[in-house]
Image 1 (spheres, rainbow over the protein chains, first blue to last red):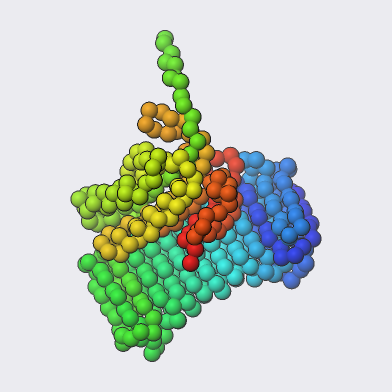
Image 2: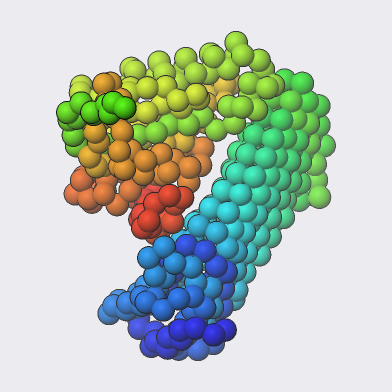
Length: 240
Length: 178
């Protein structure tokens, strides 16, 4: 990438704060002790560091900059951008990303808060709370400690939720694979919902749909609460 | 050609809150206008019941409301209390009262009963980033309440770049402390 290149020592617990109006943002956590920022935008970009380990990169006023950042494993990352995709790879700490139209992809993080208005969201693994939100894009979460997702029309898929799950969507379809160790709460207006639980888990299933079909193939019990409501969507709870 | 002169305008300082019912268009399409109106009425009634002295509903905006508060602390407290009431009412009635809120403290220019200006525009952009059930606020609001509020916590989302605004705004997610 041609442009500005900043090489910074990582102090304490590193935290990256990256702001650019548009342009692709890529952050890679790897086995290294410094931070490398390559900015492909105009000059006058601003980099500030402080004693706590916080590194702040802000692209020039109203400017755009493609950013490629390499940082130590466990770094906290905060990204704000209007458009352009954001990709975060490797093992990160707390990850917070807000973009308007870009898509967001995250590898592994301790906790997440990621939001986009029209882009899609993909998360491989989040050990703790995984809060994701998009209006029209789809959400795909691989593994999550505790998942919170909302969309308007985008589909929501959580493959493996260890703890609780809370999903709200107007018309998106919802697919949840839960471990049964936390409660599952899903609310939709018209989207269909499918919840999969491990064989042998007995949920207290509270399913409600005004016109959609309700199916629960699990034996009822008190292992966890599965509370799903929809106005018109079909609801299915079944063992894996 | 005649030129209309703007009447002298009054500038006030306060908190502007935008509310928006998530999924309202879908709900109207599924359930019809009458039930959609019930949802709007429910939101408005709960807001009117909870507004502190001096605060007011400036106007209705489709499925949302524009609120004004003279006090930042009261604004944040009211928003959090309202979210709890919206949740309770939604659970009890089955109505999808999924409300998101954006809050910004600053200066507004009064135009008859309306409030206009840059700080109003910021609040309207903040609500775009919020999800159902959330209260998001700007760093200016957090500063106005001296960084905190008993019984509430504030989680930073980071610098957020918003359409039409030249500089990023630091946003925070307010929630009841558990």
